[in-house]
Each structure stands twice: as C-alpha cells, then as structure tokens.
Image (cartoon, rainbow, N blue to C red; front, side, top):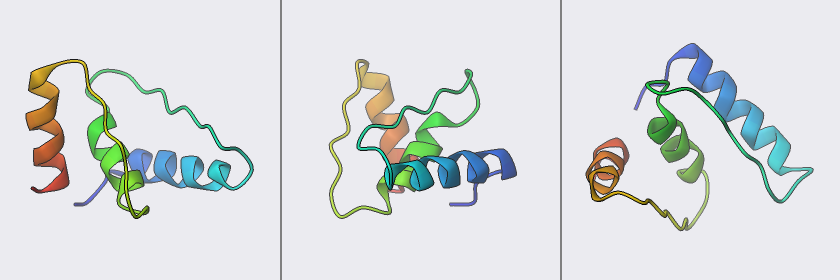
Length: 67
C-alpha cells in the first residue's frame, strides 16, 4: 500500500521513537488515514494485537491490511 507523504513521515516518526520508548501514541485527524498508518507500522513487526471498538472498523482494518 502506498502512503501519502505526511503518512510516511508519521510512520517514520513512530518507528524512530519505538527505539527509545516502549509506548508511542500517534494522533491524527479524521480522514488522515490512521488505519493505513497503523497497518504500515504493524507490518514491520512479527505479530500485532489490533483492538477496535466498532464492528465497521474490523472491515476497514482488513481492507487496509489487504486481507
């Protein structure tokens, strides 16, 4: 999946901060592509726990992950 420039910057920033911290929070506005950014970050790790509070977010997340 191709991320927009600002999404790439956000993902890069989160991954850099993981080296110094065990908890990192990415905040972005509605429509900024949080699911796509989270999928890009999760794709860098062997396993990921994904928790959502709405059933619609499950379909959105699966689409973003390409599954």
